[in-house]
Length: 384
Image (cartoon, rainbow, N blue to C red; front, side, top):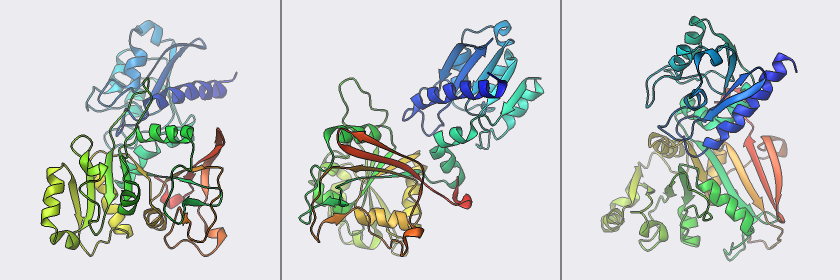
């Protein structure tokens, strides 16, 4: 195996390790690190949880300077060069220099941004950059988007029938997808920072919007539950409101609509609900309004938002080009009827050729259901 192929192989191992931190490390990036000596893996580690030791610390623990001087260290993101919640990893590497360091990509965070790589080279360490960079960027796309734009990564998720309905004309939607698909959605909920829905979804389904996992599974984080409720329609008796003291709820309202409902607002606040008021000049379904809402989530530390409906919310987000990823579950059912409800409204497009395309699209079968997963294709100027 030549050097390039060898580097790609070990970086792939490091990237797979990094994925194990998903849901646990955000808003930090996922990072994996492996140490290779004479073609053999001798140590490895990954960033396991926010505020904890970084991948390099786990991988280098217990390795002496002599061993490292004969080793190559593969890391999926440039070693940090600043004091944050932990000391800078680059100083750890410089204290017992490896023969070589291979980095998938530079870290664009302003306190790193090439400084870690420069420090390694100043120490005389041979550094290679850019091995499997595309895969590394895809792994940490939410982190990169938040750094570049101040907005979180937006995942649109819905279940629909073969003929594209998310509910019958009467509003019935339980259950389009099967138990295995729903279990996968709960795992998704367990690793995002926020779950967002419109008020119509709350009124129709009275959802909990919580992650319910198996007895042997752990929930990485309790997502903030966000309701877009311009006219403040949801009721005090809803499950979201009644559980707001246990799991946070943010209701986004039009400032004018809420002014005449002071008593209802006070009751919601006493139940633990928080409010985000948007001035009338900033419509909730406009691009500016939606960006304001998403920025609020990011300002609270959110890197990933799972949007679970309804069709108007999806349509507004797609029209505003704010969706990054789609997770769609298709159940083998057909409901027909003119009044059956579709997944996405909004303005849409007038020509098929102008429809949204996807990168890294994949399909899987889940005991009869089909699951589509894809990243929205962007023009170069839109990429994080």
